[in-house]
Image 1: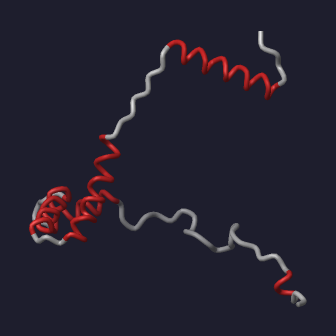
Image 2: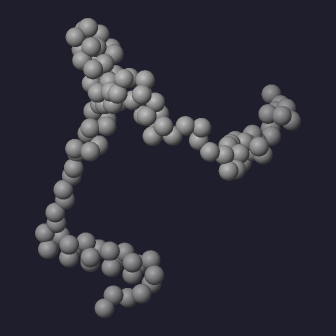
Image 3: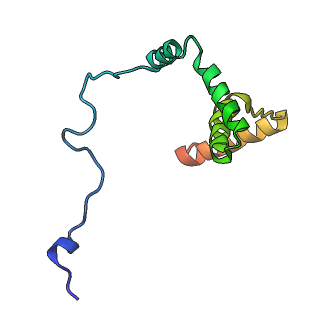
Length: 115
């Protein structure tokens, strides 16, 4: 089977396209701060966090498992990013071993002998 001219040509993907994207100098039509202010005003002074908690509790009491799971994901993704911390402590021997390994790798890359 012969390849046609169009199938033989390599397709190009990606790259810049003229006229694509947002115009230079364009601004967001709404900021997060403006959005939260609007929610606060239209919710009779309740903050977004209060609304979120109230809605979460309503879904929980309504036993809507699918929507409840979505709320859990939303809240945990936000909360866990601020709560989850990993503390790494290295002993003096480990620090020295890392220094030595780095010096050896740098020497191999640059061709400079270690002293």
